[in-house]
Image (cartoon, rainbow, N blue to C red; front, side, top):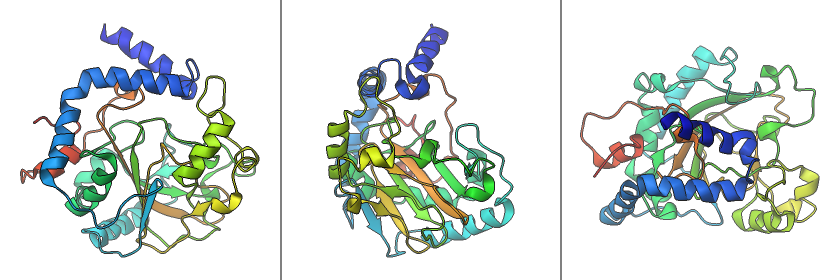
Length: 312
């Protein structure tokens, strides 16, 4: 039975949910995962209410920017990333989940060596911002997107850089969960020549998606600039061309976005994917689940963020 479920789930997710269409597949997956994990998801809603975390800033129109460098553990996390870049930049193997121009420099096993990466994302101050928006204590993604990534991107990695933008270099909205939050931290100053992360606010994206009938069966997952800007103003585009240590909180299931395009110079950033337990894809039914090292100090909030299987 498990093998059959895995086979069906993989088929439904294949080719960016082309079989039923993205919207239909997401609804089906949300219902299916809700039946399987509803109790633990409700526990996370109740835990958010019990903790009463007060965010210092709020995600509005699908995103929030923090340039204060004041979030706990950010300096230690950036120092760890400096070590990773020094050791592995330019030589990381291509991850078969992604393209050559976009490479993750770490695996889940490396998180024990560089614990500051987890200290940062599980701090109450950071989770307060995410949980305030989502309405529950989130968990690191264990499949897609990878929960914690230290990413190097640019043309220097890509033998096909002479081709037009492709894959994640083209406008899209993520179907993994809805809503969900990416936390993106610039590990180096980012300029236009480094292929910055680029997005449209949620309200702009909603207008574009409606006018273009996005996520419907038969419609492509990735849309050209010309198509998107035929229905919304290009001037509403935002780009993460900001200093090292800038933190972007963004719901990539509501905001059209792309990145790593025209990266003439290397770009380095840290990316965290935070979702519910009732995802809107089927990836947990057929992919192995990444399991970050768990804390020994018994901190409940930290355990909930790092352990998708945590129970009440």
